Image (cartoon, rainbow, N blue to C red):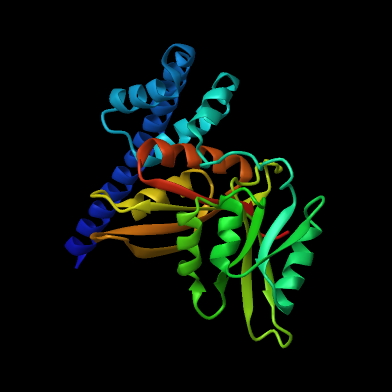
Length: 290
């Protein structure tokens, strides 16, 4: 028994020593990664965003996703990269609303949708109603420059995400600008309605909580693990994940992510997704609780 106690004690001590070494090693690694990040970013004007990103990855020999996420955050804090960030179109913003369409909102008219329109109109200057014959007609009104926004139901408390409406966002290249939660009279059902347009709402306080939604076509790598790691590195969390088959390609699927994080950290996350995934599509960026 004494030998057993002595041996287990020795093994336990060795285990603790190794744990301490591991913690020190991880701390030293993070310091080195941070130094490398600053050195590469110092050459930013010469390399540009793409050059900085690839140089950092090459120097570290296959960088971890979390390290690349922190690099993207550092890039977004460098004033000289602001123009390049806009050019990269990381939130997939389309053209601005055509003159005469500002504030015009297309929606399918019924009692509840009328109430939703009135709620959204309180948040938009000069809101005007445009009555659509169907949800597709509402989307086409924005796509064809007849309206600035349309209203779509995108989630409810029984079915979750309404992916048939997400497919409309994809088809007409629309982005979720704002979200409104609406309950029926006895509160037994709730529906999230999206105010969707050509671009996301970037007029926000840096520290405010935002929900960033995007989709990614599945590749060989583990996208789920990758996005979780990046969200964690940027101080965010995954709110929901869903998958759907890619139309006309049964072998591929598309992930739909919703990530909650500070508004300031949504930009580096969008940059990371742009740099890493050619088949990334932004869906929305909006305040969770308004």
